[in-house]
Image (tube, rainbow, N blue to C red; front, side, top):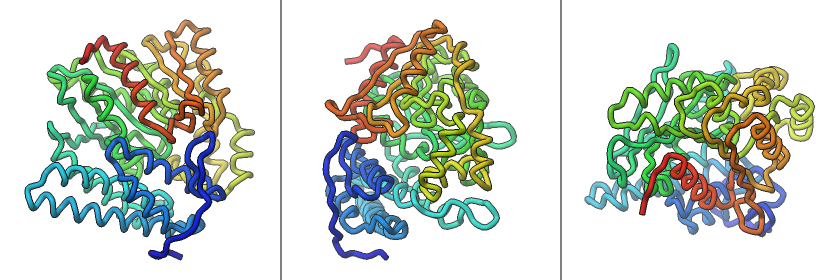
Amino acid sequence: MSGSQVKNHAGGYGPQGWVHWPEHEEKSFNFVRVLASAPEGACTVGEAFLAGSRIDPADDESWHVEWTKIADVSLARAEQALADGHRETARANFLRAANYYRSAEYFMPHTDAAGRTDPNRLAAFDKVEAASHQYLKLMKPAGEIVRIPFEDSYLDAYFVRSPYAVAPYPVVICFGGSDEYKDELLHEMPRHAFPRGLSLLLVDLPGQGGSLRRRGLYARSDTEKPVGACVDYLVSRPDVDTDRIALYGASLGGYYAPRAASFEHRLACVVSDGAIWNRLADRDFLKEFYRAAPNSLNVRQLMFLTGSANWDETMDVVGKFRLDGVIDTISCPYLVVHGEQDFLGVDIAENSVAYAKSKGVDVTYKLFTSAETGAAHCQMDNPTLGQEYICDWIADRLGIQYD
C-alpha cells in the first residue's frame, strides 16, 4: 500500500531521540536519519515530515514511493533553478534530492535471483549518485569524482576541498559502515570539516555504495588494503599534505578504521564513530541477532554486503571482524565515539578503550548521553554534536589552527 493520504502515527521523544513509529524501529531510525540531516542542508523539516506522514511503516514499497516523490520534486526544482541561473538554490536542492533518493533505496530488495544487486535498487542508487554529481559540480571549489585503483578494480570516491584551506591540504579519509556510503557522508561531514581546514576523501570501501553495487566488491576484514589504496592515491596528489592524513569510519566503519590504522602507519590519527570491538565476531550474538529478527533489514544488509547466500556464510565472513590482538599496533592517536543508547550496547566501546589503553595506544573516549542528545547509534538522533566533536579532535591532532 502506498499513496498520498496522511497516515496517523504515535511518534514521541525517547532516550534515543525522536521515534516516529514506535512499533517500527528500523523505519523510525531511518526516518530520523533523514530528519537529523536538516542542519547539514540535506533535508527540510517540512519535507521530511510530509514524507513521514504519508508512509505506511509496515510497507517497504510505501517507504520507497514516498521518499522518491519528495526526491523527484527536489530534483526538478534543482534543475529549474540551474536553468534559471540560480546556482545556490540548485545546489541546495541537488543535495536534498540525493539524500531523499538514498533514503528511498534503503528498504528495497537487495539482490536478484542470481545474487546480483537487484536492478531496481541499482537504478535507485544511480539517482543518488546523479544528484550528488550535480551537487559536486556546484560546490565551491567544485568536488571531484574519483576512481581509486584497487586490486583489479577500483573504489568509488569523492574528493572535496575545504574552501578555508590552501594546498597542501590536510585530508580525512571517510567511510561509513554496513549501509552508509560516500553520498551520505557528502552532506554529513563538510559543514563541520571545511571550516576547520579539513578536506575530505569520501570513499566506498568494499561492501559499500558503488564498490558493492556495481563492482561486486564485498566487505572484508583486511581493510588496511583498500585504505592503503586510498592513502596511495592521496600521496600521489601534490595538493595533499601527506603528513596530515586522518581516517574516519562510522558504524561498521568503527571496525574498518582502527583495523586499517593497525597496519597502515601513514595515518596521523583515526576515529571510530561508533565502536564495534569484537561484536560481529561473537557467534552467539549473531545467532541471537538472527533468531530475533531473521527478516530484518540489518540481517539482509549484512548478507548483501558480504555476498552471502545465507546467515551461516555471513557469520563466517564477519567472524573475522575482531580487534583484540590487532589494535595493539596503532601508532597514531585514536578516538572512540559512542552513544549510551547505541543498540549494540556501551560495553563494546568501553572494552575497545580499555584494551587500547592496556596496549599503550593514545586513545580518547567520548560517550554521548541522552541528557545532551547524540546518544543513538553514531549520534543518529543529533549527528551535528558528533561531527563538531570529531572534527575538533581531528583538527587538534593535525595541528590545525582556525578562526
